[in-house]
Length: 456
Image (cartoon, rainbow, N blue to C red):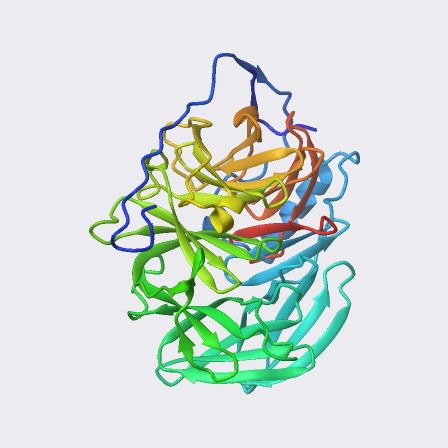
Protein backbone atom coordinates (compact mmCIF):
# COMPACT_ATOMS: atom_id res chain seq x y z
CA UNK A 1 0.00 0.00 0.00
CA UNK A 2 1.22 3.51 -0.81
CA UNK A 3 0.32 6.93 0.53
CA UNK A 4 0.44 10.01 -1.77
CA UNK A 5 4.16 10.71 -2.00
CA UNK A 6 7.04 11.32 -4.36
CA UNK A 7 10.06 9.00 -4.27
CA UNK A 8 13.57 10.03 -5.23
CA UNK A 9 16.20 7.30 -5.63
CA UNK A 10 19.72 8.68 -5.55
CA UNK A 11 22.19 6.48 -7.37
CA UNK A 12 25.45 6.77 -7.55
CA UNK A 13 30.65 23.60 18.47
CA UNK A 14 32.47 25.73 19.94
CA UNK A 15 33.94 23.77 22.89
CA UNK A 16 32.43 24.07 26.37
CA UNK A 17 35.22 26.34 27.63
CA UNK A 18 35.41 30.05 26.89
CA UNK A 19 38.92 29.79 25.42
CA UNK A 20 38.16 27.18 22.78
CA UNK A 21 38.08 28.05 19.09
CA UNK A 22 35.57 26.61 16.62
CA UNK A 23 36.60 23.81 14.32
CA UNK A 24 36.78 24.56 10.62
CA UNK A 25 37.26 21.09 9.19
CA UNK A 26 36.87 20.99 5.39
CA UNK A 27 33.77 19.41 3.97
CA UNK A 28 33.38 16.80 1.27
CA UNK A 29 30.09 17.16 -0.64
CA UNK A 30 28.29 13.94 -1.45
CA UNK A 31 27.83 13.11 -5.11
CA UNK A 32 24.46 13.91 -6.66
CA UNK A 33 25.40 13.08 -10.19
CA UNK A 34 22.46 10.84 -10.98
CA UNK A 35 18.93 11.41 -9.70
CA UNK A 36 15.89 9.49 -10.85
CA UNK A 37 12.42 10.78 -9.96
CA UNK A 38 9.33 8.58 -10.03
CA UNK A 39 5.75 9.04 -8.85
CA UNK A 40 4.31 6.29 -6.68
CA UNK A 41 0.80 4.94 -6.95
CA UNK A 42 -1.70 6.68 -4.69
CA UNK A 43 -4.85 6.03 -2.74
CA UNK A 44 -6.99 8.00 -0.32
CA UNK A 45 -5.47 6.85 2.98
CA UNK A 46 -3.68 10.14 3.75
CA UNK A 47 -4.08 11.39 7.32
CA UNK A 48 -3.94 14.95 8.55
CA UNK A 49 -0.78 16.84 7.61
CA UNK A 50 -0.93 19.32 10.51
CA UNK A 51 1.96 19.19 13.02
CA UNK A 52 1.06 17.15 16.07
CA UNK A 53 1.36 20.11 18.42
CA UNK A 54 -1.32 22.00 16.46
CA UNK A 55 -3.90 19.22 16.51
CA UNK A 56 -6.73 19.49 19.03
CA UNK A 57 -7.22 15.85 20.00
CA UNK A 58 -10.66 14.75 21.10
CA UNK A 59 -12.12 11.35 21.77
CA UNK A 60 -14.59 11.86 18.95
CA UNK A 61 -11.90 12.89 16.47
CA UNK A 62 -9.73 9.92 17.40
CA UNK A 63 -12.69 7.57 17.01
CA UNK A 64 -13.45 8.96 13.55
CA UNK A 65 -9.79 8.71 12.54
CA UNK A 66 -9.58 5.14 13.78
CA UNK A 67 -12.77 4.20 11.93
CA UNK A 68 -11.56 5.80 8.69
CA UNK A 69 -8.20 4.03 8.96
CA UNK A 70 -9.97 0.72 9.54
CA UNK A 71 -12.10 1.28 6.44
CA UNK A 72 -9.25 2.30 4.15
CA UNK A 73 -6.33 0.18 5.40
CA UNK A 74 -5.97 -3.09 3.47
CA UNK A 75 -5.94 -6.33 5.44
CA UNK A 76 -2.36 -6.89 4.16
CA UNK A 77 -1.10 -4.17 6.54
CA UNK A 78 0.66 -5.85 9.45
CA UNK A 79 0.72 -4.59 13.05
CA UNK A 80 3.66 -2.45 14.04
CA UNK A 81 6.57 -4.30 15.66
CA UNK A 82 6.59 -4.15 19.43
CA UNK A 83 7.81 -0.68 20.34
CA UNK A 84 7.89 1.85 23.16
CA UNK A 85 7.31 5.53 22.38
CA UNK A 86 8.58 8.31 24.64
CA UNK A 87 7.16 11.84 24.61
CA UNK A 88 9.07 15.03 25.26
CA UNK A 89 7.00 15.64 28.41
CA UNK A 90 8.10 12.39 30.06
CA UNK A 91 5.40 9.88 29.18
CA UNK A 92 5.79 6.40 27.74
CA UNK A 93 3.34 4.23 25.79
CA UNK A 94 4.06 0.66 24.66
CA UNK A 95 2.63 -1.16 21.63
CA UNK A 96 2.26 -4.92 21.43
CA UNK A 97 0.56 -6.19 18.31
CA UNK A 98 0.03 -2.58 17.21
CA UNK A 99 -2.16 -1.55 20.19
CA UNK A 100 -0.74 1.18 22.44
CA UNK A 101 -1.12 1.11 26.21
CA UNK A 102 -2.30 4.06 28.30
CA UNK A 103 0.68 6.42 28.74
CA UNK A 104 2.64 6.27 32.00
CA UNK A 105 4.87 8.91 33.56
CA UNK A 106 8.42 7.65 33.55
CA UNK A 107 11.45 6.76 31.48
CA UNK A 108 13.00 3.81 29.70
CA UNK A 109 16.16 2.50 31.32
CA UNK A 110 19.44 2.25 29.46
CA UNK A 111 18.88 -1.47 28.87
CA UNK A 112 15.88 -0.59 26.63
CA UNK A 113 14.01 -3.43 28.33
CA UNK A 114 12.68 -1.76 31.46
CA UNK A 115 10.14 1.00 32.07
CA UNK A 116 10.61 2.90 35.34
CA UNK A 117 7.37 4.76 36.00
CA UNK A 118 5.98 6.90 38.80
CA UNK A 119 2.48 7.36 40.20
CA UNK A 120 1.90 10.20 42.66
CA UNK A 121 -0.83 9.89 45.29
CA UNK A 122 -3.80 12.25 45.23
CA UNK A 123 -2.45 14.19 48.22
CA UNK A 124 1.05 14.37 46.64
CA UNK A 125 2.51 12.80 49.77
CA UNK A 126 3.72 9.54 48.22
CA UNK A 127 5.28 8.48 44.92
CA UNK A 128 5.10 4.84 43.86
CA UNK A 129 7.99 3.76 41.62
CA UNK A 130 7.44 0.72 39.42
CA UNK A 131 9.91 -1.35 37.40
CA UNK A 132 7.99 -2.91 34.49
CA UNK A 133 9.28 -5.32 31.83
CA UNK A 134 8.60 -3.79 28.42
CA UNK A 135 8.43 -7.24 26.82
CA UNK A 136 5.26 -8.37 28.59
CA UNK A 137 4.15 -5.52 30.87
CA UNK A 138 4.88 -7.47 34.05
CA UNK A 139 5.58 -5.33 37.13
CA UNK A 140 8.90 -6.61 38.49
CA UNK A 141 9.34 -4.36 41.54
CA UNK A 142 7.54 -1.52 43.29
CA UNK A 143 8.55 0.87 46.08
CA UNK A 144 6.84 3.79 47.82
CA UNK A 145 8.75 7.02 48.46
CA UNK A 146 7.79 10.10 50.44
CA UNK A 147 6.97 13.21 48.40
CA UNK A 148 5.93 14.22 44.90
CA UNK A 149 8.81 12.95 42.77
CA UNK A 150 9.70 12.58 39.08
CA UNK A 151 12.00 9.86 37.70
CA UNK A 152 14.80 11.53 35.75
CA UNK A 153 17.83 9.23 35.29
CA UNK A 154 18.75 5.57 35.73
CA UNK A 155 21.79 3.40 36.08
CA UNK A 156 23.02 1.26 33.17
CA UNK A 157 21.44 -1.92 34.56
CA UNK A 158 18.03 -0.45 35.49
CA UNK A 159 18.56 -1.30 39.16
CA UNK A 160 18.51 2.27 40.48
CA UNK A 161 16.79 5.52 39.59
CA UNK A 162 17.35 9.19 40.44
CA UNK A 163 14.23 11.23 41.12
CA UNK A 164 13.72 14.92 41.79
CA UNK A 165 11.22 16.92 43.79
CA UNK A 166 10.75 20.50 44.89
CA UNK A 167 12.75 21.76 47.87
CA UNK A 168 12.91 25.17 49.52
CA UNK A 169 14.79 27.32 47.03
CA UNK A 170 16.06 24.37 45.02
CA UNK A 171 15.85 20.64 44.34
CA UNK A 172 15.49 17.48 46.39
CA UNK A 173 17.25 14.45 44.90
CA UNK A 174 16.19 10.93 45.84
CA UNK A 175 17.90 7.72 44.73
CA UNK A 176 15.91 4.50 44.94
CA UNK A 177 16.80 0.88 44.28
CA UNK A 178 14.31 -1.88 43.61
CA UNK A 179 14.07 -2.61 47.32
CA UNK A 180 13.67 0.94 48.60
CA UNK A 181 15.17 4.39 49.13
CA UNK A 182 18.97 4.70 49.27
CA UNK A 183 19.68 8.46 49.22
CA UNK A 184 17.87 11.73 49.85
CA UNK A 185 19.32 15.24 50.00
CA UNK A 186 18.04 18.77 49.42
CA UNK A 187 19.98 21.47 47.57
CA UNK A 188 19.50 25.22 47.33
CA UNK A 189 20.07 25.23 43.55
CA UNK A 190 18.15 23.75 40.63
CA UNK A 191 19.70 20.41 39.70
CA UNK A 192 18.87 18.01 36.85
CA UNK A 193 20.34 14.47 37.09
CA UNK A 194 21.89 13.13 33.88
CA UNK A 195 23.36 9.77 34.81
CA UNK A 196 25.21 7.71 37.39
CA UNK A 197 28.94 7.11 37.49
CA UNK A 198 30.13 3.52 37.14
CA UNK A 199 32.37 3.79 40.19
CA UNK A 200 31.29 1.95 43.35
CA UNK A 201 32.61 2.24 46.89
CA UNK A 202 33.18 -0.91 48.95
CA UNK A 203 30.21 -3.26 48.61
CA UNK A 204 27.57 -0.61 47.87
CA UNK A 205 25.27 -1.23 44.92
CA UNK A 206 24.70 2.54 44.52
CA UNK A 207 27.25 4.30 42.30
CA UNK A 208 29.54 6.72 44.13
CA UNK A 209 28.47 9.66 41.97
CA UNK A 210 25.43 11.11 40.21
CA UNK A 211 26.15 13.58 37.43
CA UNK A 212 23.86 16.61 37.46
CA UNK A 213 23.37 19.82 35.54
CA UNK A 214 23.31 22.77 37.92
CA UNK A 215 21.38 25.73 36.52
CA UNK A 216 22.82 29.09 37.53
CA UNK A 217 19.92 31.38 36.68
CA UNK A 218 16.15 31.26 37.24
CA UNK A 219 13.91 29.42 34.77
CA UNK A 220 13.38 31.63 31.70
CA UNK A 221 10.01 33.05 30.76
CA UNK A 222 10.21 31.26 27.42
CA UNK A 223 10.43 27.48 27.55
CA UNK A 224 13.10 27.22 24.84
CA UNK A 225 15.31 30.10 25.97
CA UNK A 226 18.96 29.35 26.80
CA UNK A 227 20.18 28.89 30.36
CA UNK A 228 23.56 29.15 32.05
CA UNK A 229 24.70 25.93 33.70
CA UNK A 230 27.64 23.84 34.86
CA UNK A 231 28.24 20.14 35.49
CA UNK A 232 28.55 18.82 39.03
CA UNK A 233 28.77 15.38 40.64
CA UNK A 234 26.66 14.46 43.67
CA UNK A 235 28.65 12.36 46.13
CA UNK A 236 26.09 9.70 47.03
CA UNK A 237 27.76 8.96 50.38
CA UNK A 238 27.93 12.53 51.71
CA UNK A 239 25.54 14.47 49.46
CA UNK A 240 28.25 16.98 48.60
CA UNK A 241 28.47 18.57 45.15
CA UNK A 242 31.89 17.99 43.58
CA UNK A 243 33.67 18.94 40.37
CA UNK A 244 33.77 16.45 37.50
CA UNK A 245 37.06 15.30 36.05
CA UNK A 246 38.43 15.86 32.56
CA UNK A 247 37.36 12.83 30.52
CA UNK A 248 40.73 12.62 28.76
CA UNK A 249 42.91 13.63 31.73
CA UNK A 250 41.68 12.31 35.06
CA UNK A 251 44.28 14.49 36.84
CA UNK A 252 42.29 17.63 36.00
CA UNK A 253 38.93 18.83 37.27
CA UNK A 254 36.52 20.81 35.12
CA UNK A 255 34.85 23.94 36.46
CA UNK A 256 33.25 25.77 33.55
CA UNK A 257 30.06 27.70 33.11
CA UNK A 258 28.19 27.32 29.85
CA UNK A 259 25.29 29.08 28.22
CA UNK A 260 23.34 27.21 25.62
CA UNK A 261 20.23 25.55 24.33
CA UNK A 262 19.86 21.87 25.12
CA UNK A 263 19.22 19.97 21.91
CA UNK A 264 19.12 16.20 21.53
CA UNK A 265 21.11 13.52 23.28
CA UNK A 266 22.08 9.89 22.78
CA UNK A 267 23.37 7.35 25.30
CA UNK A 268 26.09 4.78 24.62
CA UNK A 269 25.75 2.09 27.32
CA UNK A 270 28.60 0.10 25.75
CA UNK A 271 31.06 2.99 26.14
CA UNK A 272 29.50 4.57 29.22
CA UNK A 273 29.03 7.92 27.45
CA UNK A 274 26.18 10.41 27.09
CA UNK A 275 26.36 12.82 24.13
CA UNK A 276 24.25 16.01 24.21
CA UNK A 277 24.10 18.62 21.46
CA UNK A 278 24.24 22.22 22.69
CA UNK A 279 24.45 25.66 21.12
CA UNK A 280 26.71 28.19 22.78
CA UNK A 281 25.68 31.82 23.17
CA UNK A 282 28.63 33.50 24.89
CA UNK A 283 30.44 36.19 22.86
CA UNK A 284 33.19 33.86 21.69
CA UNK A 285 30.70 31.04 21.09
CA UNK A 286 27.94 32.88 19.24
CA UNK A 287 27.04 30.95 16.11
CA UNK A 288 28.80 27.77 17.21
CA UNK A 289 27.67 24.47 18.65
CA UNK A 290 29.26 21.64 20.57
CA UNK A 291 28.61 18.08 21.71
CA UNK A 292 28.88 17.79 25.48
CA UNK A 293 30.32 14.35 26.27
CA UNK A 294 29.69 12.90 29.72
CA UNK A 295 31.73 9.83 30.67
CA UNK A 296 30.32 7.75 33.48
CA UNK A 297 33.85 6.97 34.66
CA UNK A 298 33.66 10.56 35.97
CA UNK A 299 34.68 12.84 33.16
CA UNK A 300 33.41 15.47 30.75
CA UNK A 301 34.65 16.71 27.38
CA UNK A 302 33.24 18.92 24.65
CA UNK A 303 33.57 18.16 20.94
CA UNK A 304 34.09 21.00 18.47
CA UNK A 305 31.78 20.84 15.45
CA UNK A 306 32.58 21.97 11.89
CA UNK A 307 31.14 25.33 10.89
CA UNK A 308 29.57 23.70 7.81
CA UNK A 309 26.74 22.40 9.99
CA UNK A 310 25.77 25.94 11.06
CA UNK A 311 24.29 24.52 14.27
CA UNK A 312 24.56 27.88 15.94
CA UNK A 313 21.55 28.88 13.85
CA UNK A 314 19.91 25.60 12.81
CA UNK A 315 18.52 22.62 14.73
CA UNK A 316 20.42 19.35 14.67
CA UNK A 317 20.50 15.87 16.09
CA UNK A 318 22.88 13.07 17.12
CA UNK A 319 22.89 9.29 16.67
CA UNK A 320 25.23 6.38 17.36
CA UNK A 321 25.95 3.86 14.63
CA UNK A 322 27.96 0.70 13.92
CA UNK A 323 27.28 -0.80 17.37
CA UNK A 324 28.01 2.47 19.17
CA UNK A 325 31.47 2.87 17.62
CA UNK A 326 30.65 6.01 15.61
CA UNK A 327 28.82 9.21 16.52
CA UNK A 328 26.99 11.16 13.79
CA UNK A 329 25.82 14.76 14.12
CA UNK A 330 23.37 16.10 11.51
CA UNK A 331 22.14 19.60 10.77
CA UNK A 332 18.92 20.80 9.20
CA UNK A 333 21.01 22.03 6.24
CA UNK A 334 21.90 18.44 5.29
CA UNK A 335 25.49 18.37 6.51
CA UNK A 336 26.63 15.45 8.66
CA UNK A 337 29.84 14.96 10.61
CA UNK A 338 31.19 11.76 12.18
CA UNK A 339 33.38 11.05 15.21
CA UNK A 340 35.05 7.76 16.10
CA UNK A 341 33.98 7.13 19.69
CA UNK A 342 37.23 5.42 20.64
CA UNK A 343 39.15 8.57 19.64
CA UNK A 344 37.09 10.60 22.10
CA UNK A 345 38.10 8.43 25.04
CA UNK A 346 41.51 7.08 24.12
CA UNK A 347 42.99 9.08 21.25
CA UNK A 348 46.36 10.77 21.80
CA UNK A 349 45.28 14.01 20.15
CA UNK A 350 42.19 16.15 20.68
CA UNK A 351 39.33 14.35 18.92
CA UNK A 352 38.25 15.78 15.56
CA UNK A 353 35.60 14.60 13.08
CA UNK A 354 36.72 11.73 10.89
CA UNK A 355 34.65 13.16 8.00
CA UNK A 356 32.12 15.85 7.21
CA UNK A 357 29.89 15.85 4.13
CA UNK A 358 26.90 17.54 2.54
CA UNK A 359 24.59 14.54 2.47
CA UNK A 360 21.34 16.11 1.27
CA UNK A 361 19.91 19.49 0.34
CA UNK A 362 16.42 20.72 1.12
CA UNK A 363 16.17 24.45 0.45
CA UNK A 364 13.75 26.12 2.83
CA UNK A 365 13.39 23.07 5.07
CA UNK A 366 14.81 24.13 8.44
CA UNK A 367 12.97 21.52 10.51
CA UNK A 368 15.10 19.68 13.04
CA UNK A 369 16.27 16.31 11.71
CA UNK A 370 15.39 13.11 13.57
CA UNK A 371 18.04 10.39 13.29
CA UNK A 372 18.14 6.61 13.62
CA UNK A 373 20.54 3.81 12.72
CA UNK A 374 20.64 0.04 12.36
CA UNK A 375 22.49 -2.57 10.31
CA UNK A 376 20.52 -1.16 7.35
CA UNK A 377 22.34 2.19 7.59
CA UNK A 378 21.17 5.62 8.70
CA UNK A 379 17.72 7.21 8.55
CA UNK A 380 16.84 10.91 8.67
CA UNK A 381 13.35 12.30 9.17
CA UNK A 382 12.95 16.02 8.50
CA UNK A 383 9.64 17.78 8.17
CA UNK A 384 7.65 15.36 6.01
CA UNK A 385 10.74 13.81 4.36
CA UNK A 386 12.42 10.47 5.05
CA UNK A 387 15.93 9.74 3.75
CA UNK A 388 17.75 6.42 3.85
CA UNK A 389 21.53 6.92 3.89
CA UNK A 390 24.35 4.47 3.21
CA UNK A 391 26.63 4.76 6.24
CA UNK A 392 29.85 3.88 4.40
CA UNK A 393 29.49 6.45 1.61
CA UNK A 394 27.14 8.96 3.31
CA UNK A 395 25.04 8.99 0.15
CA UNK A 396 21.25 9.06 0.11
CA UNK A 397 19.84 5.83 -1.32
CA UNK A 398 16.14 6.67 -1.11
CA UNK A 399 14.01 9.72 -0.35
CA UNK A 400 10.27 10.05 0.05
CA UNK A 401 7.75 12.51 1.45
CA UNK A 402 5.14 11.26 3.90
CA UNK A 403 1.87 12.74 5.04
CA UNK A 404 2.97 13.66 8.55
CA UNK A 405 5.12 16.09 10.48
CA UNK A 406 7.92 13.72 11.53
CA UNK A 407 9.03 13.99 15.16
CA UNK A 408 11.07 10.80 15.74
CA UNK A 409 12.24 7.81 13.72
CA UNK A 410 13.61 4.30 14.14
CA UNK A 411 15.13 1.99 11.53
CA UNK A 412 14.55 -1.76 11.44
CA UNK A 413 17.35 -4.11 10.28
CA UNK A 414 15.47 -4.81 7.04
CA UNK A 415 15.43 -1.08 6.17
CA UNK A 416 11.83 -0.40 7.17
CA UNK A 417 11.43 3.04 8.75
CA UNK A 418 9.26 3.74 11.76
CA UNK A 419 8.16 7.37 11.71
CA UNK A 420 6.21 9.07 14.50
CA UNK A 421 4.27 12.28 14.03
CA UNK A 422 0.81 13.75 13.52
CA UNK A 423 -0.63 11.49 16.26
CA UNK A 424 0.48 8.17 14.80
CA UNK A 425 3.39 5.83 14.05
CA UNK A 426 3.84 4.50 10.51
CA UNK A 427 6.06 1.69 9.20
CA UNK A 428 7.33 2.55 5.72
CA UNK A 429 9.67 0.75 3.33
CA UNK A 430 12.31 2.60 1.26
CA UNK A 431 10.09 2.08 -1.78
CA UNK A 432 7.19 3.91 -0.14
CA UNK A 433 5.01 1.00 0.95
CA UNK A 434 3.00 1.49 4.13
CA UNK A 435 3.35 -1.84 5.95
CA UNK A 436 2.03 -0.91 9.39
CA UNK A 437 0.41 1.95 11.26
CA UNK A 438 -1.21 2.72 14.63
CA UNK A 439 -2.59 5.86 16.22
CA UNK A 440 -0.98 7.09 19.43
CA UNK A 441 -3.14 7.44 22.57
CA UNK A 442 -5.33 10.50 22.75
CA UNK A 443 -3.46 13.58 23.95
CA UNK A 444 -0.01 11.97 23.74
CA UNK A 445 2.57 14.72 23.29
CA UNK A 446 5.37 15.31 20.82
CA UNK A 447 7.41 12.13 20.32
CA UNK A 448 11.03 12.25 21.42
CA UNK A 449 12.08 8.64 20.88
CA UNK A 450 11.00 5.28 19.48
CA UNK A 451 12.47 2.14 21.05
CA UNK A 452 12.16 -1.13 19.13
CA UNK A 453 11.69 -3.87 21.72
CA UNK A 454 13.72 -7.04 21.50
CA UNK A 455 16.50 -5.38 19.49
CA UNK A 456 19.08 -5.45 22.30
